[in-house]
Image 1 (cartoon, rainbow, N blue to C red):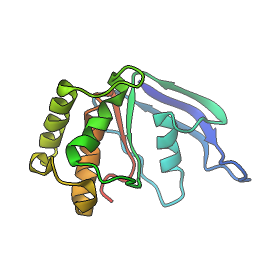
Image 2: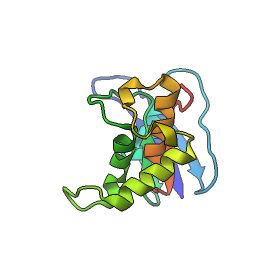
Image 3: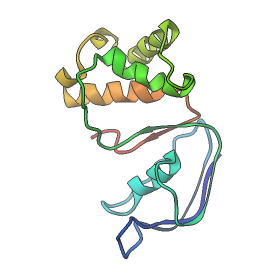
Image 4: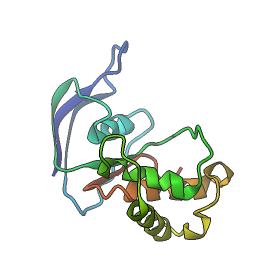
Length: 155
């Protein structure tokens, strides 16, 4: 269960709310879409669902772990696609743990699920925008979270 009850959020220094009295109930295994115009609070709601933002009002119930694919992400290093997806295994590792062979195998499977298996050794900085989006999706999937939250997944 993922449930928002009259959730509100205001960014620091802002007078107006980015999200006001927002309610939603979502069930695992079902697709739930948030539709609305630019600036209507969709990304803010997803950030709250992922646990990145804390609401200033209302309540949220979140069962299980959330994998979050943000709208934009800067690539600071030129990792291979396999390395990049393997980082998604971090929630399953002990503190300061290093991914092992099983983690790499799961990352390869996730790349295959999104049709990017043949790009495993390619640098993420050399991918097209669409290819990068698929690799980012593989990284979210390899987390094996109950919830996968995608912000503008087709951009």
